[in-house]
Image 1 (tube, rainbow, N blue to C red):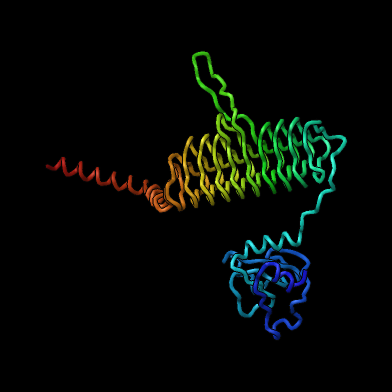
Image 2 (cartoon, rainbow, N blue to C red; image 1 turned 45 degrees about the vertical axis):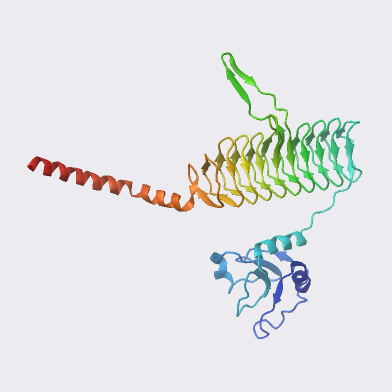
Length: 348
């Protein structure tokens, strides 16, 4: 792809090096690869978002770089964009476009006669589409996918191998679900009694909105009475769990092994770090970030960064950690003071 064309598509400012530094560099230069800044070769495009990698600006062999601010004295072309990470992601999409599937239903797949599969959809061998299910235009079901009765899958949605979509679940458009994910399993609902636990029927469903991505082995449980909802544009990492009746807001990110207990309410543009968990019925407002390994035990009512168990504003958490590190020192000081007090008491 030519530099000029890429700059136009990314809506980035193209800054060429001084003629004395790289006389061969111009907007018609052909870029052929994407590479990390430290190991890039001529003809490749790289990017810079963290100051830690700025040391490679003078030595990288890349032909072009995406960055936030132009740098003087570089021998490579610069694509200046206010959000270089986003621009690099968009460039990667342009270099590696998704290859269209050849529509059709494999004779080795099972599609119930009452199911509706769009003519432009692709159903691979050993996929199973149950009675009354609906598969939208250009959607793809990889081998081993199970679509339960009355489930709905929107347009341009891809379900990778062995994904399970249980009965009545509704999946939106342009959704990507990675292998082994289970959407719509029973919520964890049991009522204790003298003879053991009585299972509470989980009669709600799961609704996944448009433009959501769900990682491998993730699980989203159906609600007991109300639907579990994943909002538009949300991104769920591998091994994430969303408990029954929970609501995940738009463009919210849940990193690996994050888990929501039942009826949790999470706002828009929230980020939950890896191994973060919540207790039942917790509410988290928009634009909250919760650091890894934290536990949310009560509502988080203000935007900001939270850490620890229980999760609290990051300044409080850092202060508490600093105090914990001084416990041994404080214990020794208290022992010395206690001994002195005892000594003074004996003298009196």
